Image 1 (tube, rainbow, N blue to C red):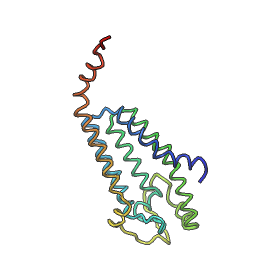
Image 2: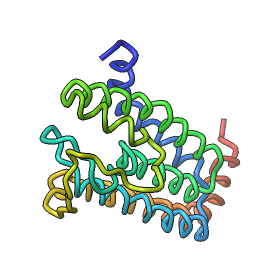
Image 3: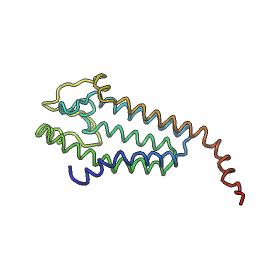
Image 4: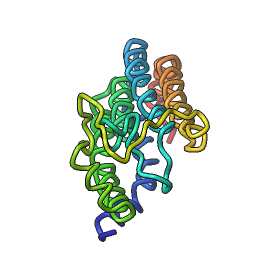
Length: 200
C-alpha cells in the first residue's frame, strides 16, 4: 500500500463522522424527497445484498452474480445509496458532501483492493479484469472458464454482515423523517431564544 492509499484508508472512517454531522446539519428533508430517496435506496440495497450473497472474502475470486457485471458491485450499490441519501436530504450541500466523500475515498479503496486481489489471485484476476469493468456494470454477464455457476447464499449474506447496510440506511431515513417532523416546530422557539436580549 502506497502512502496515499494508507492515508485515505486511515482517515476514511475518522472523517465519516464529521461528514455525517454536516450532512444532517444542512439537510432539509421533505416527505417527497425521503420517499424518492428510499425508493432509489432499495435498488442500492438489492445490489449490495446480491453481491454479499455471492462474495467469499479471501477464499476464492468471486466472478458470479453481480460480480459478472462489475468488479465492485458492493461499491456500485453504495454509490446508488449515496445518491439516494443525497436525494432524501433535499440539500445540494449535503449532496456535495456525500458524493465528494464517496468519490474521494472509495476510488482509492477500490484500487487498493484491486492490487490485493491481483497479488492473491494472479493471472485469474488479470483475465477477470480484462472482461469486467472496475465500477460501471457491463450489460451482459461475463462467462469465464474458471467462474463456475455460483448461487446466492443467504448464509454468506449474513456472514458478510450486509444487513448492517440496510439497518444504517433505514436509520438515516428515520432521522430525516424526525427532522422533517420536529425541526420546523422547534425553529420558532430557537429563533425566539436567539433574539431575546440578554440582561446586562
